[in-house]
Image 1 (tube, rainbow, N blue to C red):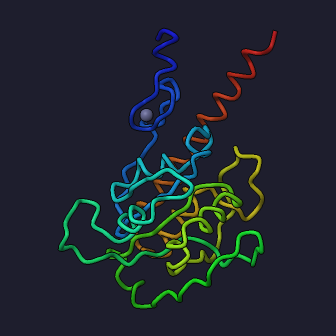
Image 2: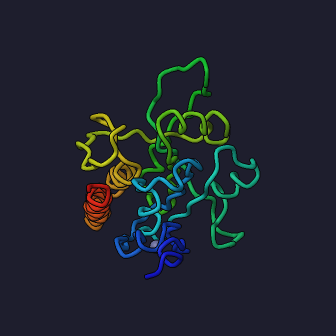
Image 3: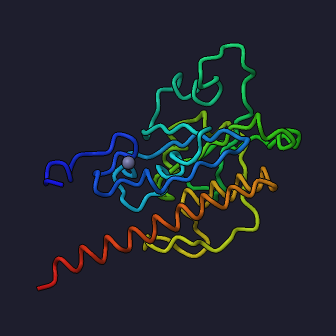
Length: 220
Ligand SMILES: [Zn+2]
């Protein structure tokens, strides 16, 4: 592969072709739809997991931005993604913890999550924010529609398998892990979800190889 080809971006995963992660994606069918809102600073983050998540979930959509056009965001939250105007509006739920008050970025209290929504996962649309803790909070602050969504809090958090991002502290999960955990909560019998974690493990392994290769190149 010549240098220009090596630098060219893959049109699916937006990574340089030599680092393309498309082959790592594992198709995983699940009942809820997943809307991934990615902060622009995460787009070229080599260690990010949101793109792999999107590539693995046929019923997902990924949009990039910090402050979205309100009408456009409303459409992504409420409307059928295939243009079916007669489709019933999905039950949109935001994957976000009950965060402590922050006077710099105050949030409106989230409405309660109706228990009956959880009985019908096929009509749920899980909204996921992909960004650092601070950036996610800012996106929530800048997009009041997201504050108006009932929130799904994760319970029984597993230890993170995601070991390549130093900023990660115990109890913090990657976007893929947190979404997988939420989907497992919504659809406990869906054992295919384990494949999402396996895809992430493969990404982590590849990433370590690249890092080692890069370090090796710099050595005399
Ligand atoms: Zn790719």
